[in-house]
Length: 250
Image: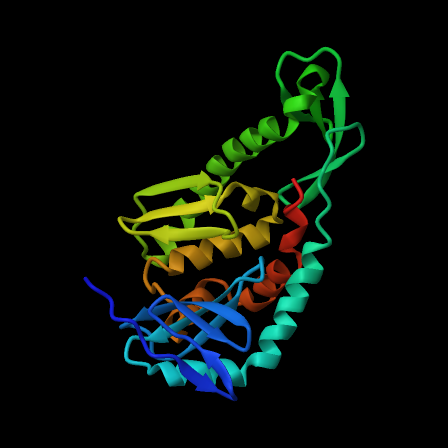
């Protein structure tokens, strides 16, 4: 389908451009998502500081611009918070004594001279074969991915039955800056880093994504479904927003 260019809109003397994909206001660039199911406007500030806005399909361009302008103070505050949190994620080193998270607990690393497997978790420590330390991140990610696959499969099986959601596949992979996603065909995916979160927070991620199996957007119906199965979801969501960055440094 051929897309026609939209005319520039000017607000406050500053040019603002809108399209089906981008919206620029006051030097900020948003990714725009339109949906026939959407009834209200919603702005999201991702962990990276990336901005997006979800809007009803019939919402006028000027309406989006005015909504963003009303939220500028909130948006800039959130961007500053995300930038500050990003600074709290030091890169891990594969040396004796370094701490690595697993299901919310930190385990110290111990380099082993003689060990048959590359990595094991025993006696409260991650034990890494010293000769494999140069591949430490690759080995640890593989270990996390296998454990996450087992953990999330069990959680999804239990919660999906309770929530009345049909899931055909559970997949663990690198999802960039998303904790999870619910795709077409009943496939739910989780970031391998989600296995580093405390179990109660990882469970929130599961409930959140399964609720998307019934409600694709973050409508009131979506949050009602989440609350039905996780009454304290607000506290868990806030914890994830404030502390999730801790797992970024691997």
